[in-house]
Image 1 (tube, rainbow, N blue to C red):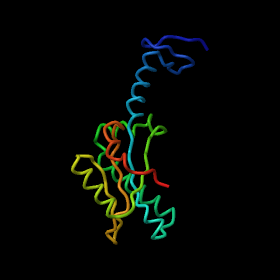
Image 2 (image 1 turned 180 degrees about the vertical axis):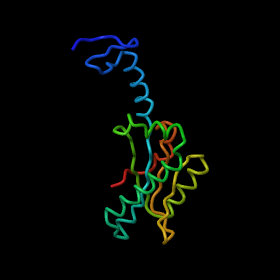
Image 3 (image 1 turned 45 degrees about the vertical axis):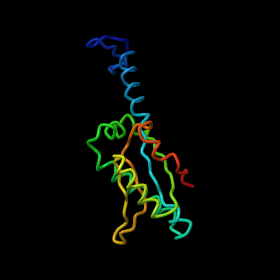
Image 4 (image 1 turned 30 degrees about the horizontal axis):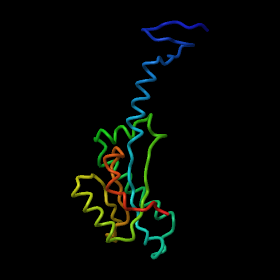
Length: 152
């Protein structure tokens, strides 16, 4: 099959071929979304001292990230982060704090700074286990987490 032009774009075999402008636009959108990050903060004591299994810890992180994303679904950064073309490029940073006191204090500091997040409180125990931010540009949020260690 030969090439033909349809509405100013090249068409090969009945499919549109991307032009340089298409690639630049797609690349720009990917770059804008690529600096977005979602921070997740776990309690270290849940596994080390309280003996929670790995699956339970992962479930807590999943609950917090889904809740933070859903609560801020109309936010422009969240829309970019969840866009179909960005799904394979999502960035999360998973950090840890010692225990419940540190997690609650971090949540209060984030709230005071205007950082939107979800503190996940396991029910019916009313037990804070994890927090997750909505997606933010990394440069806007990383300073709030600089003193925390990566979760191990």
